[in-house]
Length: 332
Ligand code: SF4
Image (cartoon, rainbow, N blue to C red; front, side, top):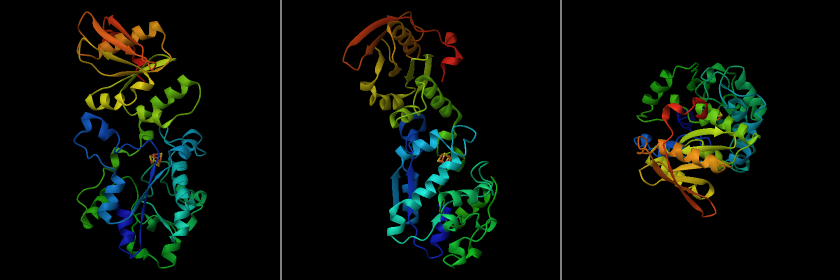
């Protein structure tokens, strides 16, 4: 928002590019979880474009992006976040996208700041992103430009270098001050993270999925479901996804026909999906676990129905699994 505004104020025509990777946080979990009900349910990129009065292009890169997540040339950050490869890919995608060439765009702007992120936003990795993406000096970072050699737009006088900034480090105070100077009273909170791949628990669930399936691969549905519910894996060949609130239960309803799913009948309870190939004993255990997360957790027996994708419905009366006996290792 700030980087775009700085360049717009130089009289440059700016349009926004928002890449959908499938791992985005905002506009997904905030819309699903009841606990996030107070957070705005919006696409923040679209909202920013509206605030700035610029056109936004939303590009679905979820298919091509898989290769970046599975095989990052520069490795991962603290979790399964391939930030350096991700940035190179996105800048390259902006370049390679015929739109830039066909519509006469001359350069690319990002909001990166030297030292803001330990891996992808260092003084030595910033030139690497410019080089490996192919953008070279057509990549301008207006917020930190004074820490970097002059880019083409600065040298050509398309933007005045003296109007750019030299922000560095993790401190966001200068950005917040600049936002206030521009009159922005509302902006997304950068500290919250915008991408699930930087989240320790999410990355553990993704790694568990790869381990259980014996291959490093995923579908869009897989990575959506990792954002939702309590995930319990009693055995390598199956796991439970248990809704944690009404919002999550509603979301999981959309997937119920593709999975064996459990409902507690005698007591109110969550919707539980079973991912994998459970046998009869596994179903019994799964029903007991589903009962544990229902209102009948202290009852002697809870009636649970198991619905198979072929339409078969089984019914069990089970003793809820005692909470203290659920091994920590089952919690993915
Ligand atoms: S946080 Fe996610 S979207 Fe952002 S650079 Fe890293 S991998 Fe890419």
